Length: 208
Image (cartoon, rainbow, N blue to C red; front, side, top):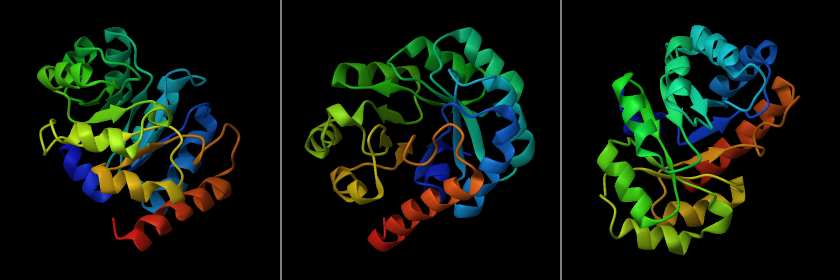
């Protein structure tokens, strides 16, 4: 399934930074039940490849599972071996995009400038992660959208809350990566479910 198709199902990517393998399946179940079916485990989490493997085994038929904070080609290979289907980076590295595509995975690399964005597009990125969004603005995204291909999804990541999504959508965001606003290390599934519902309610109310 293409990234745009996944985003049509789930405009939010849940970023589970700090999750442990024995927590992953229950938290993943809470997210999927709430309607968030794109899940990323950053590689600076404890035993991230094991968490990715557990999530992939449990939800691969109904969710896109992958890794964030991917820094090397070796990381890409290990994510593929764990059953992941998504590679997300915090930075603009075309080589990682190429490695992800070679491994049959979707690639959502990070960028902050037009030069970075276009280098990643040439490498084959499936979507672009505007990061850190706290240092940007909807006005910046609107200006970027004027020159980026209209079909290319842009996902702001960093500092997004249910009440701040509307201006970003108005500027052309296709969705968001949500980190600590949806999961903090140690959060039980019930807490994650409540946070996820708040985001989904905001999406539904705004008809985004």
